[in-house]
Image (cartoon, rainbow, N blue to C red; front, side):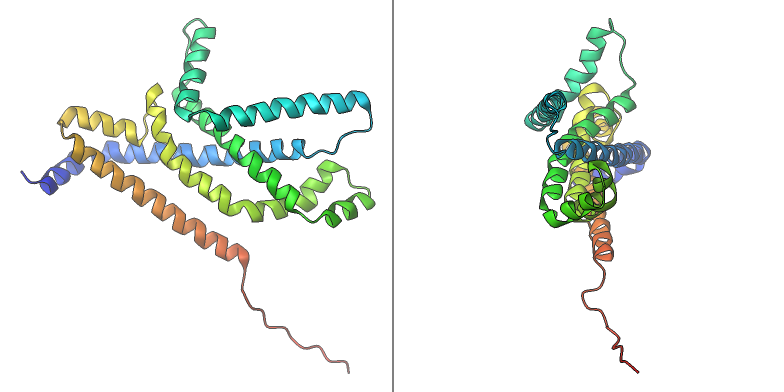
Length: 243
């Protein structure tokens, strides 16, 4: 039997569980990216709050910023596979053997990991906004959160869209590490197929192509969305003449 015949045989027999893996992978990646974006925005906004004149509040700010900085450094500085093992089995250790729901654990793990990366992206986006906008908003009586909500974040979201899109694509691939805790995603399904068929190379070749198709398609869709949000390069201006 030729290599391509083996490929076709595997697809015909196992296409349903491959599709199940694809569905779970995309769902985890999408939900986790959205939640990670929300976490990143919250952390980025909190970390950019100006120091308070009140000494007690200023110390609280320093403590909170220290905790948030530690969160960012830990989750950016350790592999997601290790984070998955520590969080999932750490909870089991603390609860006396009771484990978290697998799907919920997967979303939680990927979300907080994504949030750590997006937090720095958001912080950089906030810093890049012209200082005059901050001064103008404060001049009309806006507090920090009103300034962020109505003036800064809408601009930041547009500016960081390419980076967030990239995180989504990364998450599609990184969900493969969740197989270490038994999450039924695409790579986990490939492992089952490989064990059942003993066609290891052919199985992972199929999965490799599937991952490429997913990331390629998502990248193209996100690029299209970015172009639509950018608007036209040239606009026709109507000349207004005075009567």
